Image 1: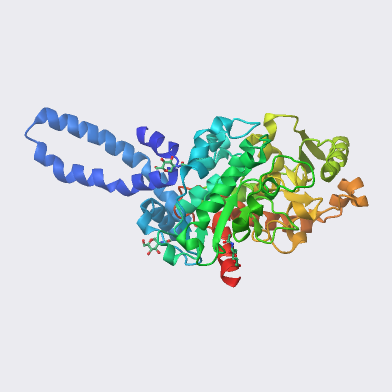
Image 2: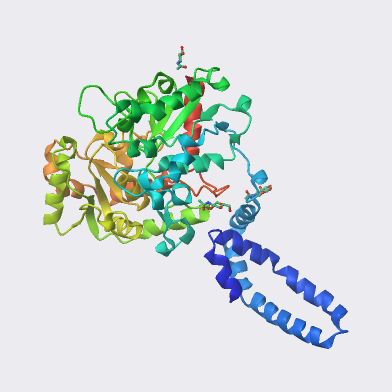
Length: 484
Ligand SMILES: *[C@@H]1O[C@H](CO)[C@@H](O)[C@H](O)[C@H]1NC(C)=O
Ligand SMILES: *[C@@H]1O[C@H](CO)[C@@H](O)[C@H](O)[C@H]1NC(C)=O
Ligand SMILES: *[C@@H]1O[C@H](CO)[C@@H](O)[C@H](O)[C@H]1NC(C)=O
């Protein structure tokens, strides 16, 4: 009993089980060979034998199920489990050679120092629960399969997870001379959100300016004028591209600085018109698996999910924002249809952030509406794909002009586009019903196939066995840098 409880409760359930089943011969071997040596002391022997017999009984009672699991998984599954266990030691991991990335150890004020003050890191929200576990946030073990892999992850925290993943990446190099990419782990998004209300522009921009100065003082900057350097930001590019005209919504000037203009910038939303060096990366969703097994289990689960809702929308209204006008249409039409599930997100509504609630609706829906809101993109797009729900876009900038590295080139293969200004947006359900059952199945299969690339694997997982968002981004960026 004791053993059964211990193993699966840890984040390393799979590894723990393996250690357990691989060790099972050891106590058995010991008892049969060595107990005779202790015959001199009867009491000792009785106690010993009794305890070991009990031990043996427990061991022999439970392991057969584990062993069976392994054999039914086939040799491959078994081998990768064994390697998982071993690969907790970093030396076992291997880089596939697609990239060699050097990570700057920046002064603390640019990353970990910011997180220390997590209560004041965002003018709207206490970020302390969200920066926990290196940005994964608070664990949600009750999510079921892969219990240690579910977290209430904040939508604007990709930069922290990215940092944790790259630090632990097998293609990380400690020798800048061997690097083809230089990662600058600045938590620019977290910093920006702490300064939205700073009216003194010099003060708002100060940290970004110090970062540029710091980089220009580094020997490796000068080799390629920073062209092989990159940032990963968890907020949209708009938060770092203040314009002199137009209203001030709190942005700083980071992406306008000459040094940063020479770099590549990964961001959850790029500026589709001025974002030559900007590359879209996924918003983090809630699933951060450590093994390929967990990923396959989840993919199968969403494939088989019953989907009683033809369509659904989870979101709130946006007053007075032109790009969000389509939200009104969606909400009105959804509320009127018995085939649509509407989850209205009023300020702070928890059902809009709780993984079980969000995914509960999305895994029961065929189509998930992805209307622009405060900006073009939404984290919800990635929750929907994770749930195997076909995304419906109303602007090309919600995904198509953003995540070219991650999504299938053929838009209609995995998503539906309804022009927000076209007549289709007046009768969404009719448009959705035009898709045949066959086509729908094919689209959903493409959506489910896209899940691994859009997922941020658990940063402590050394060899997850699939290419996650960070692997894909590093390989694509390396290719981009070498070609330019
Ligand atoms: C496991 O690791 C060993 C070496 O450590 C390697 O030879 C073997 O191919 C690996 N197996 C799998 C399935 O990755
Ligand atoms: C990763 O592992 C280290 C060492 O075991 C642990 O301290 C840390 O909390 C883990 N990180 C996460 C995000 O779970
Ligand atoms: C940016 O790159 C150009 C060459 O393309 C170089 O002349 C310039 O000095 C670089 N800027 C900085 C700030 O390093």
